[in-house]
Length: 322
Image (tube, rainbow, N blue to C red; front, side):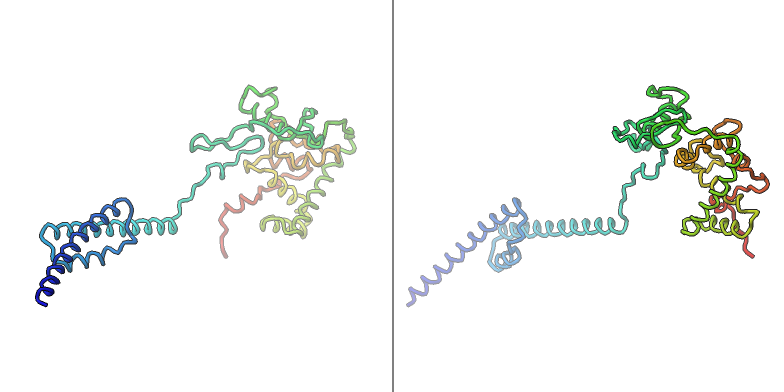
């Protein structure tokens, strides 16, 4: 019986010693696995508690201390990494970085496109116009020349304006579209027709303005001008003339270019054979710019009835209360 007890004690000591070295070996394997991959699945805390319960010598305790410190440092690093990522994500949500295309706010006009040179936006002539096979896309210019499309006309004007080698004729800086379709012989406007034409244009402008007002397609300022024209016969033609002149002055430089007359000229050329000579009469000094006074004169209006009441001017003038 005593022998069995002694044998059991010896066996227990051997088993404990064996477990100790087995655990140390396992510790080494765990450390190796921790280097190759983040050992999230291993329960290191339970393992450390078991090791701490054993009676270890100083070298073994130092090894365990280093292992525990290493794990602690990795946990701190991981927490810091997660916190930094969370802070970055929060900052991106609260202060999003929006990449702005410089060309989005660049207006280049007909015949030009926006081109990026690095981060700088620049307007250049359209490099290439689409090949048009549809005859209905053709246009007739002020030179009585048929061009393949409006794009080709605007491109040519730009090339001549920038003195590009692609310019076919320096005078094409003033090239513009007269009407859509191939050029054809237009009926001649007689002297009697020309005398009556300004009145017809005045009436037409007022009717267009009134139609847009009824459809609520005018700004508040122009709605007021239309209402004034409806209730005051002396302002009927003048207000309509000022409205249309302001409407045509797209670049708000207080003059209407030949090119800006396109919305009136092109649609009416085939219907009103007097529109071309009429618009020519609106530019008596041939400077390719039509002022409000010149516009009123060709419409047969008194200069004293014409005031630059454009919408952009009204918005820039402070209104006094009271």
